[in-house]
Length: 330
Ligand code: KG4
Ligand code: ZN
Image 1 (cartoon, rainbow, N blue to C red):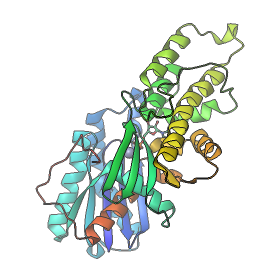
Image 2: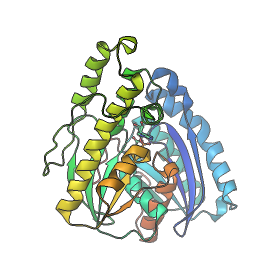
Image 3: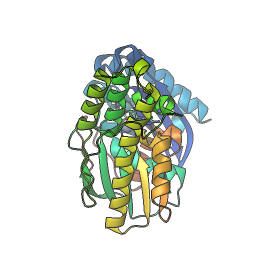
Image 4: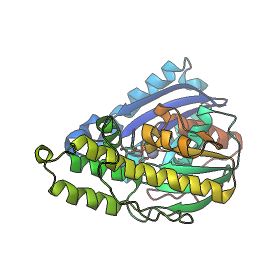
């Protein structure tokens, strides 16, 4: 089946074409307008989606060497995400679906992040543990089958991506914070500053990153690089290390607790190199998977892929469906 996927939940305008589980084309338009504000401005995000969707979708279909008439189904992000941003994609998708008389399916963005791992390796088998780490979510899921997910634990406050973004702002780095921190921390000493790690007992799958962020804020209040033998690079590496330690340790404990042999990481923070290395180092006997870098952060390939799985299973969404800004996975 040939499915067009559309993703507009936050600040990436994205489209992709998936045919029989293979991505034929995928385009991501990252909105740079937010950089000057140090975070996503919802109203601007919606306007940018609205402005670029048509061109981007046409370009993506062109890149797939197919035509609009070849598309057999539409998959679009229904939630979670920013209301206005979601609306632009959903309205566009509904228009196409009505105009071309095609089935449509609303896709859960979080579920799609998990399924991006099947794009990296279609031999991935259930059950597996997934560490889902994005800008808005930090959760540990036991994935038993498609549609059968058990939440093992999640963050009580900030998400890991948020900790990267807010930390970067405190450190005077750019947005989005994750890639900026990763780049700047290179060569820094990750043990220079002892930042706090929360809920580190073996049986706790809860996370908390707000204390870490506050701790960085206080540290930077008193920090003067000239009078210190610790550099800003060391502080950044230490901050990144605190986030990575917590994520990798809890993933390791969750895998051991659940008794599964495979784990995956999904969402934007899965692109982090230190996290990838820490997880591999801590779990030498577990099959560990990450999506390709381009499919860690927001993209429509994951939406088209999961949408195709569901549409071929006969699932569709009624045309009058609404967006779900707070959509949950189960
Ligand atoms: O999944 P995603 O693109 O959007 C959401 O669904 O939220 O995740 C975005 C988050 C941002 O917080 C960004 O700073 C973080 O992923 N991120 C990273 C890296 N690349 C993106 N965090 C750490 N290291 C990275 N290389
Ligand atoms: Zn995302």
